[in-house]
Each structure stands twice: as C-alpha cells, then as structure tokens.
Amino acid sequence: MSPRRGSTSSPVGPFTLAVAGLIGDAMRSQGVSGRQLADMIGRSHEYVNERVSRKAKAFSPEDLYAASNALGIDLAALVAEAERAARSVARAQKGLR
Image 1 (tube, one colour):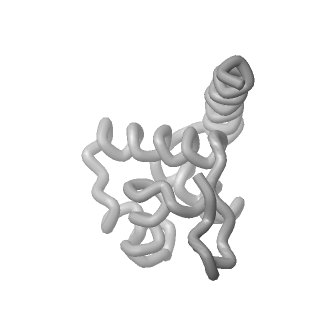
Image 2: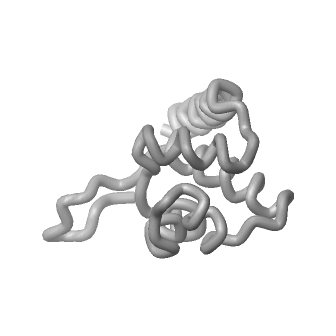
C-alpha cells in the first residue's frame, strides 16, 4: 500500500493494522460503538473511525493507552499480540518475494 500522490501521511503497516483489528474486536465483543469509544477517550468519532474502521491511521500512544483502558484491555498484552501478528505478516510477505 503506497501513499496517495501529494499525501504527507505514510501507509499503515502490519502492526498498526493488527492494533486496529484488536481494538475493533474488543469494541464489538463489548458492544461499544465508535462514537462511544470516542467519547470515552475524548476524541472525535472521525478520529476513532479512521483508526478502527478504515484502518487508515495509527492511534497516538496516548490514545492507544486511553482506548485500552476504556475497553479494559491490558496494553502490554495488546501490543504483544499486535507484534506477533505483524511479525507473522512480515514473514509471510518475505516468503512471497
């Protein structure tokens, strides 16, 4: 995935995608909407949507901390699981080259 021409944002990588998926899974399992999570962490619905639903941007470290706390997720476990997923994707991509 490459950034759009003229865009200053970089594409998200496997770790960011894994974090977004894990946060989204926790939201769904707890029945928390994007608007509710946004209210819980003091951010806009669009901010949360860009990171969870569209997976277009990464959470800031502070917002990831706030989201994990709001959802009752252990941050260290979340990061470890996302890292495992990202490494798995990297290995798979390396094998395809």
